[in-house]
Length: 283
Image (cartoon, rainbow, N blue to C red; front, side, top):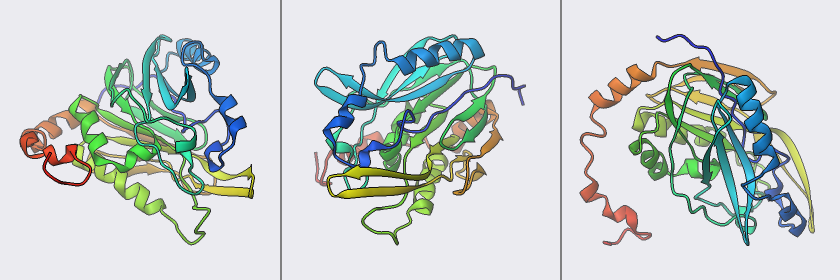
């Protein structure tokens, strides 16, 4: 096991304020700002350089007449490595993101960073992991985490760690629906199917938004967690309060296990063309 030195702070989805997508309000578009010169990203670049850490920054992006749910990756020297725009956009009671966001057009991207091996998570604040060693990571965003194709695409490109900043909680239309365990099991499956660690950082607490039909509220699940490469949960917070959780992985050892397990050796891309269709018919 290599020694650990530096941190990698991690934000939740749209962490700059409350989760405004509970309601369809024109005034909330004022929260969007262009990627270049975005004040939060600039601030995080200074902080990353000062602390020698890598910081993924979730933000509401304005791009001319388009809008995206985006994340910028800031390296430990303050360099902006680029952005990923959320690919899958949900639309349902309490999670009305299609009103605000265009579907992302960046495709699934991986980022080569300086650090990543020791992890911790602060719900509603930061997710942290660290190492003085080079690492390739990929961050998708919230609803992306329900699609196994996305996780596989990221690992195929070399991602060694999957990150999912998240805003998931209760369902305003059905107070008896609790999808927390389902949410965790799906991502544990991504980790196990691809033999990579996975980190999910979720909001925690109750948020109330005013709409034209009265107030709507979501109680976010919290339960931020770190899964190991077989899908096992190795560290987790609860749904009651903010917490810091830590786990440690040897990425070189995991890479060897991933190679020897054969899940990428035995793939048959020639048989997967049906995945390029919407209805399962032959493409």
